[in-house]
Image (tube, rainbow, N blue to C red; front, side, top):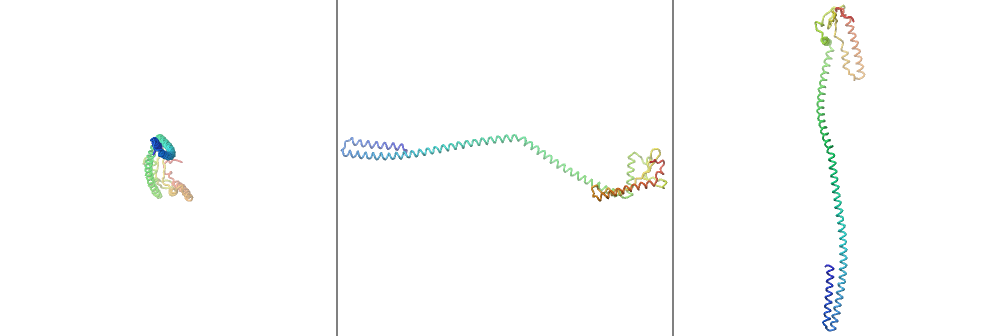
Length: 283
């Protein structure tokens, strides 16, 4: 029950009891009865007043406790409201920070967009270059294989030619062919400007030079294309990157070739071809 209502109810009951006692006195009953009734009424009034006084104290205490509780709850409510406001403020601050961060990230992404496009273009160019490099590498590998095969064929041909040139008759035919190619490249005609394999008679006897070339003024000269070649072929087979022993052997073969050429020149000189040629030029 509300403490105020209870207090008012007590006052009303006390007033009612007082009015009842006063009415009894006024009716003029017997003196003893009136006194007894008055005493009884006063006692009841006193008891009732004490009761309501205690009740008033209890209600006051309850009211004070309720007031204290209400004040405590009010303080708690104020604290809770403050926490709610702080929480809402923090949320708004966090949302503002998040929005600011998102705007910053958006600006960064916008600023980096050209860079990203440049990187994408560069990556595309790198991919194209890599594709071209692979294609060129494949073509180069094919060219290297072709060059290697050509080199092998050339080496085989050179080995075959070297083997053939070791034979004196084959080397003689090769020398005659090269000599004829040289004079024809110079514009000379066979049987007009030169003859091949013509027999002549000199002071040393009958000879057969590879070619007799007719010179202006009625002069002529005998040419022999055969030369020693074996030592030179052996020296040419030794590479310049060989060891010291092989290089020494190569030098010895070259010296041997020089000696063989000199001996061959001396042998040709002993044939005295110029004595068989009319008006041979003098050296």
